[in-house]
Length: 162
Image 1: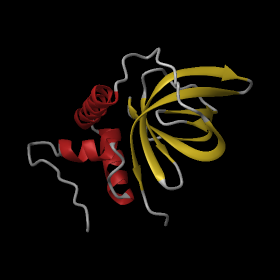
Image 2: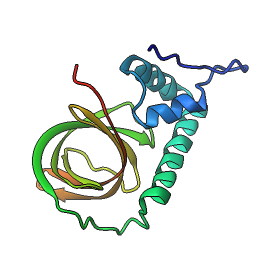
Image 3: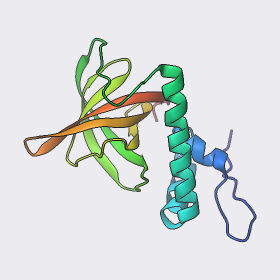
Image 4: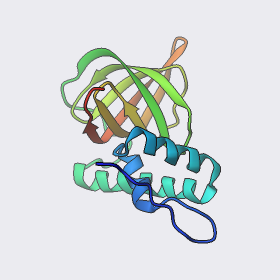
């Protein structure tokens, strides 16, 4: 089933809020996601809409998952890994893709090694081989030449291998 990006027909062309929410959740096909990224990088109105969508999804997830505050520590068993992934910042939006390593994973969180500092509170998508995870950076600490960041997981979607 083909996805269609809806653009409003007001004086200036803007993305439909539903498309921004689908982008935040990682549920757009890659070519449609690139369309959103391209538009948002040059449109302040839609960039603000993307931030609003990301904050809405984060806040809704906190209500349903029970994330009380940023001091929460993972209590679940952590599974060590060294899987490659990439991070895309949703709020604040950046078209840049950061290559990272997932160091461990649990039901509600990830620890990643990244070459760049990630700001606390940043809403991100973590793209892995078969999954896209929506999360929030809870902390980021310098470790040698890299950084280790804790990511609270808010939502995830599995995608088929291509």
